[in-house]
Length: 238
Ligand code: SF4
Image (cartoon, rainbow, N blue to C red; front, side, top):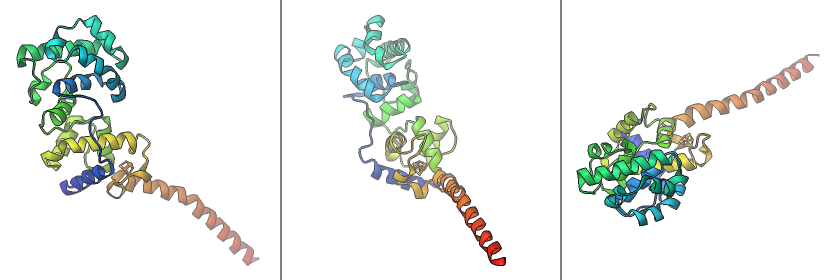
């Protein structure tokens, strides 16, 4: 795995390539971001952004959402998928906020992850973007990008979060997640577009796999050249 200095350089370089990296969910406060992030599971940010304006107008805070009827809530969020599961999570989350936190979103990882439907990734999104508490959400994009580059190792999000947080100063945690998510969506996709990547020189995947592929691709040409050479030798020997 790369040194903390290299990890920092990689994140700074990616931030240069993606200067507008930020969560793409629309929100005005921590409550709205929490709702939007729960809805974004197995959906797209664009789809969630279509649904949330009406949802936030009807349920502007935890008190209003806690009083919602599940059937009515399900209708409003049906297009985000898994609407039954999500409506239960939203109701449970809002009721727990009212019961335990006076309707406010707590700026604390343990308190957040005790809320129904809120995992570590969701909590980190809300902490880092809406509550000013450093957080490094690790999703599938961060896992793929960080492992390919070699700034993290493993497919366990908690482990990768710990590795990246250990290598970076706190003020870079949220940025590190945002730039890798955007890089994973736009450039370092499952089929990576390495020709458009600013961190090729630092990327283990590019250096090892792509370079080997290029070598393999050029091997038949050399063989062809060799057989032409040997034909020449045979011809000249006659
Ligand atoms: S060089 Fe390719 S594999 Fe490496 S981070 Fe860039 S796009 Fe991903």
